[in-house]
Length: 258
Image (cartoon, rainbow, N blue to C red; front, side, top):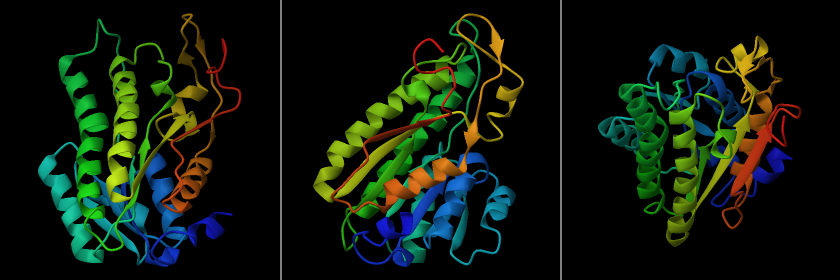
């Protein structure tokens, strides 16, 4: 299914497609980047830790390792300049980089708040801006941006004020890019994920705080399904867009009262 969809991409076969994945050194970013490489994309792997990015790349000839902090405007500009220099175009940005600092509105430090906003929101804006600038100038014009939201964009967990606020803001960012992007044939969608099994969700197996004060172990699901979902979204022709896609562990306490 994914291969059939990818062949429909505007401008040529999938092995001509280029992508940037941020936060590619671990977790969902690593799984998504490897799935895109496996599907034939040329993928720029962006993140703060070069050794982790090189581990993601392995021996893939189509992987381009570009260490970058998405919260640093100069580093983001250099990231996309490197992609332009290497490949001449960009077809897909997976805006995945993010951090999570726990804390209630009464407890969270201003420094942790600012770091969360800088990475989860401003970093996504900076990457999207540079991607659109490249996509609107290339021939053929256009491309796709997929923002990694969260089910926190729908409902918060306890003590997640900064993370939840940024993920709600990402939804606004996604809608605005989707609207603005029409002028340049740039599609933008969002994937909201709940309890994919990664390093970040590991503690859920031991128990995580619930709204009623209990600590309860929660189910997770294989993060490979997220990568499959991204491949589906990326494989659509630019005249079609998955605006929002939500993927969760089936029995996690999200829908209804838990």
